[in-house]
Image (cartoon, rainbow, N blue to C red; front, side, top):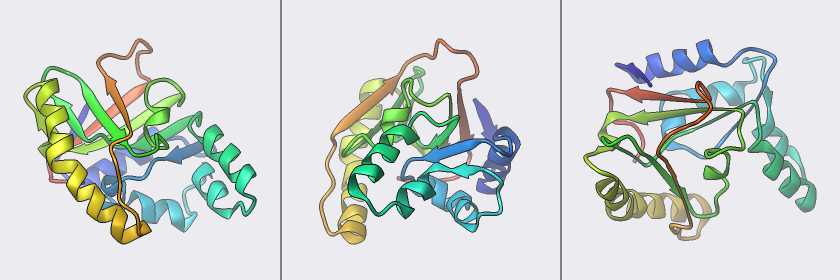
Length: 178
């Protein structure tokens, strides 16, 4: 885990960690938007192979679905978590699994950025945070962005990672995301 004071420092850490000329993908994340990562990624100034961009550009529905499935195996996958238990577990969920699919194993390297307000005392408290706090906010966001309600569909709980160095959690001492 890397602890930083600000969203700017979190963004700079990502730039330090992810090498140029590598493939990256990302899950939907308010946190990544708030630190400026998504704007930077969309600018094209980064030198990475942006698998998410390739998905968006594909018009064929079946090919786009194939690209989406393959993107979770990117060399570097970036996202966030919904809660962090003080007992060590990282908790993430989403409606379809498009974001969390990469987390347990698929991505070669996983970079998760989270605001310190997401820390909860126990795993039970972390899951309660998702149900009672995060989900209502995400539901409102999804309704505004997509015109449909969200749901809690797929959960991932990471208690420990066997491949040392595979997961990097960047904990930011600012409120970021839900």
